[in-house]
Image (cartoon, rainbow over all chains, first blue to last red):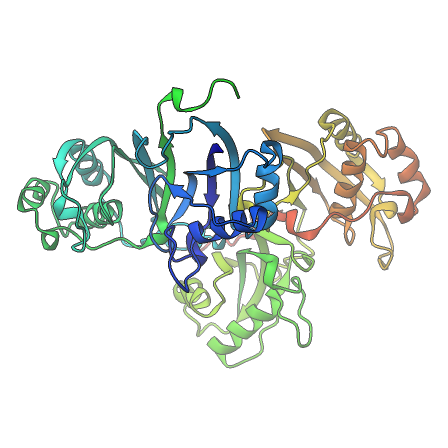
Length: 253
Length: 253
């Protein structure tokens, strides 16, 4: 058997998220189907993380194992030939047999895109959250920077979240803007369910002066989802990159 | 009556082009419908140029006349509230009563977008022409630059073209590229039907070494459509801008 890591790009609009579900179109499901068509077998595909319904990915990572009889060179074009147009395999790498796309991920980067002008370009529709009310970017930036570091993010996790530890280390949290285009970039060693969208929902409340930057300390301390802002819509969110150590890539390939 | 110039952006994918047609969805048709809904009357809308079926516009211009009873301030949001999502009015200007969007246009700029890498990003699908074979950009650039100046472009006009003069002055004709992204930019005082797509089809033949840069002189001289390359597909083409003299805009508004 050979272990592969693939790098994927997808438009989340038509999918009920990453994770395979019965009777729903999912990205993982499409990959399993494509590999079944290629190999005649059910191949298990493990993703670095589960993106929600409607969330996009610029670079998602996943791994799977295939019999050595499958030609490595043809894997990328074969998969792209079978997959729907809105899911593309950008890269296929031969990795160590014990590589695990989720457990070996050091950190991930997400980006949330907002358009803060009056008229939205049709070319951006479905790929940015359109906010027409004026936003206080300085207050949002201050709040974004405050979120860096190791903290218990319970207040920003979906109430259904069942993981034991809700402490995550945020290594990057910043607002970038150019004209009416605003991006929130965040990197962490892991993300709780809905965490980025709940952070953005709260940053937007601050930008709209419905909450204050100084409220963040209390929100984090409360560990109560109800104290934070609403969940921002999924279509502004992009999984940008999953980071691994360099040596997870096989040197002989 | 008040004369307005509007600046429009649209995704051409769902439309049978700019020009109104019976039983076909067109951009001009949508504008006439929206204005009829606002005013209860049939308002004639004149565009700077007719984009073909499937061709996009970053900035198209048009003019129309309305009774003075219509609020100028509300015109843009009202139109955008009625128009389909893939047609947006970016700007509304009060212009001189004798302004004419087509006759007063000094020149237009088109851009044709090509992606010359192996795997096309799903986010670009429908907005670039995907060419996987390697392209000789130097030969294409040389040919693009050769096309500047005043010439008879009959060889690049759709055979159905019936206009009297087929001489056009091309003031800009160049290839830009960044990685696998290639753009052909062209400006002229006017364009014959299919002219940009036929120029691009010919530049691609040159880029693929099926034709030579030095063939262009003969192609132009022949005035025969059959000597030039094929018509490139519409979805790579964008009308970028229509140029007018500064004083077409009313100074009092």
